[in-house]
Image (cartoon, rainbow, N blue to C red):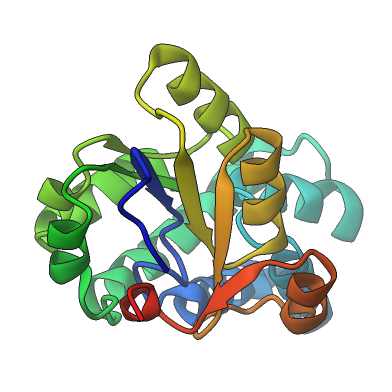
Length: 216
């Protein structure tokens, strides 16, 4: 795939740059487990079906729909904190996509951004600690803002210039990128989206296994 024509590359984080989907899935389960195994599994099912959506939306759903305690701020904060503590350790240890530095050199004409459902401040700290911040000259962005909102804001500010390409691993990544007028490539190897093969076929999406396969 020829990337030389793109002015901007936008990357999702989990499942694309980092092999972190399983880390977050387990963290959702463990955070919700004090409310029962069934409730915890329901949250995991919702999380997997809604990849790329922020933790804040998912725990709001858990409170309102799964355990019937909408608006309970103390419970919400406890869930968020438990989740964040568990995720932090896993993100420091999970695998980083092979060939990122080489891909950065090959796409030197393009600005790179992270647009993730993960917490923005946590992402910026994580990428600094793991030595990745310098690759993403366009910035590292995440929740509580949605991907839709981030993309529209960064396009409006001129930070994302078209033609632009979004590299993601979920239905929401594709939907958000299409709404913003970005091209899209589905990165499949670490994705937890269960219907990915059918979805990519139906929408005629370009699919690569990992980022290192983009130039082949």
